[in-house]
Length: 242
View (cartoon, rainbow, N blue to C red):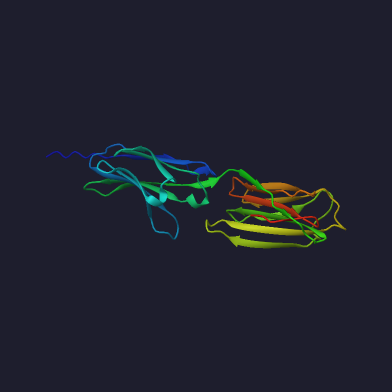
């Protein structure tokens, strides 16, 4: 009696790191598709149940779960090869993605690929309002993973003696926002700008805040998942950051 055993190889490839706001792609290929009834893409994150994103079968073809329509798309779909894209990747999309080939009558064949978001993207907004406060208040917010730190610097004067306050917020996407407010008395500080230096892990980002009658608010998402939000408020205006 001669037994012939065929071993099907499952190969996968895709992004493990993607620029914030860009698309991430994943692919899986099974060398022998004999007995494959369905191909499934799932997502798993800590302390969350496994979520089915999309499926393909010869009978029902491509199907993306309603809550992921527009976020997940097929770029290739067959019983032996499947590819998907995660659109506009954010911190919320950081997870492990599983491609699963259901092979009758055997156990499913699976591969797992995990995704992280990084690289910078910049947004800006301005929202000035009047203020009667005689001091100038500079505010800098940094959001990232791991938790960032903020330092204030100035070329004109040492800032350690000025009053500052820090606030921490844990976000739903597991990142952390640190907000630092530095109060500069106009009678003691006459410099043109101060510098906000934010650091998350090995990545560092700095922004100069210039004192003028126009305020600037800027948000930067760094390659270490770091966001900077800077604003200036003073006796002539108040800036609300959002």
